Length: 176
Ligand SMILES: [Zn+2]
View 1 (cartoon, rainbow, N blue to C red):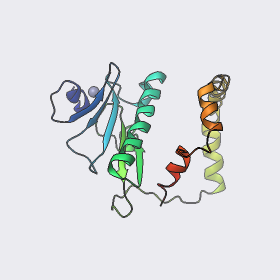
View 2 (view 1 turned 30 degrees about the vertical axis):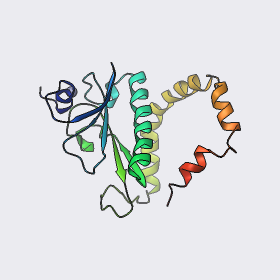
View 3 (view 1 turned 45 degrees about the vertical axis):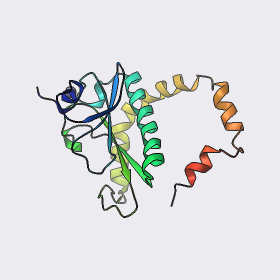
């Protein structure tokens, strides 16, 4: 089966590869909705997100975050949209899980916004009941993660937030 992202891996396309290791790759595709759009994806061909192992998901999103920072720093973007089109119904065109990082500027004309509508009580209740049973499984996963101790490095960073290089403050300046 032809896969645009596997073609990038096999150097059958003219996309630029920004980074790769044994598991993941970051590419600039030939067709993007904005200059500077980057695509992070696993090297193994997983069709949808559900198939991707947790550690690879984690790596993809950590890289997506780093790449987003790089876009802010290098291109002076005002924001980034980080998007997964998961399944045909979500507009997925390439059958290979990927995370898209899209640089945004005020007034860039990209129509990625959506307007929330107020749900009726019935709509809320029905969706809650339908999802709740599945969602209960998350509690165990969440609790397992909570048990992990916070590393001393993270604690140090949090307590040192008053420094000149306060990253949070730097990040906030990006908010227009
Ligand atoms: Zn593929």
